[in-house]
Image (cartoon, rainbow, N blue to C red; front, side, top):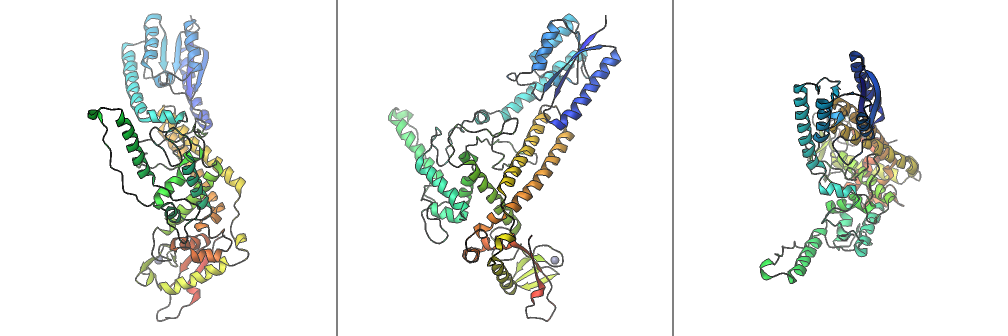
Length: 511
Ligand SMILES: [Zn+2]
């Protein structure tokens, strides 16, 4: 009698990968059937479902088991054992079927043939190894916190400003959070907001942001209060020790930044894995903390948002732009043009050198002369009635579109990573998908930053009176305004000429 065989395929959800991988696997399996003279009873296909998670259903697999039990075929061809199952229990069932009922199971990569002792031993070893790998991965990835996050529950024992431990909104704190977001969008600097939260006032300190205890100190006080409560019901021997409470400390820009970056305020469930990335860095952007479904949709937390989604994303874009500017122009500079102006000969950034800007061997220019000239030109530019026309418009629909497109690419990367973990795709496929998606993201990011340029530079460019906002800004703000508006190229000043010649400082306006 002719052998009737089932082909079992498991494939990725990634459309592009489907085309490549599934065809390759299918052809390999069909070739085996042809070589052995088998007829193909049916193809069973499951999509991108991990073979290790018992909770997940695999309709194709289940149908195949049922059909086998009904005696509809006597051989299974799969691409490799990992695709069939990684659960030792299920594998044992197939080995038993092979031993007792003559099931022939072959893999396209030829590594396991359950009709031989060696093949069965190999299969069992492989399943055991796969199992322990899965368990290791499980410990890494599916901690209780990750599980909670996927269900939209708040991380245990952590409460950001504005929320109680049970996720309820604390009105006073929530109000402070909202004022911080509003002040930032209105153009206040992180430093100014930090000063307002610390109870200071003065120039550049937003008046609407209320004085607020720092979170570290507040949490320490609350913890001791809870312990004091519990100690009332404990015997003297079981008393919980009070922990030291840190001295009151002023807010700093970094803690304001963390507040502005926290996705929980917009209602997104978050999770921060402990492991490091490929390069061994603990790089977790605020966006990567947002928990997403298989389709890349954000998972919403079970708590009420304090900040609406659009506002939150607007703040992220503004922060991204500001970070880009300060990365490019350097942080905490003492001089207007160091690390910002460019050498007119080689194009690298000049450095301050005593009273001058220098690119070694190329240019050496008086700082004062150059700065005066650049600041005058920038003020004139800021004073123009058509300044707004000189800047790219903030195109909200396009920005929203860009955000969606970026999310799609990020979802692709995550899906590929998962498929790689499940051994559905090869390392080179993962690499290809990732670099392709990253290239698209970089391009979209650049467009996004250009469209939101009017938000950068500490709100100066969108101010009613840009010139006075510029005057009032600190050095960092002035540097970012210059950077947002133009490129400054310093050319060589001919020897022996001490007078300033404007044509040696070339200002190239952006756009
Ligand atoms: Zn140079």
